[in-house]
Length: 113
Ligand SMILES: [Zn+2]
Image 1 (cartoon, helix red, strand yellow):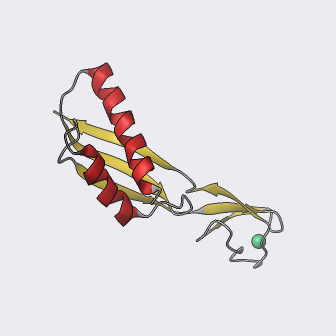
Image 2: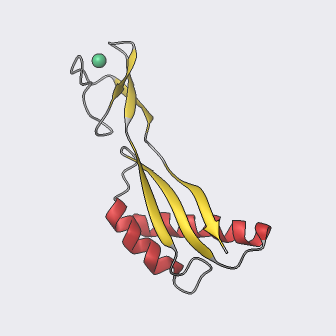
């Protein structure tokens, strides 16, 4: 499950912030997960709970924000909605689509004590 290492990356970001901004407890974490990022939100929740045990983010609420996928279709010359990374263009049904949105996962915001 690659979500475990991703969750550890998220915790690393949180701990870096905690050091810099001198807070000791995180109450909520907003995490953006793109539809094309390959991250499974439910697996992410599970792993987040596991890796934050004993950390500043223990018991923090994980708010997942779904970012829709999009891509640049060469044939249409336009940005189109994309459901999966190697999916077809919904307009021309071609496969020359370059993902350009919803491909990442990132920490958007932290609520701290
Ligand atoms: Zn197209």
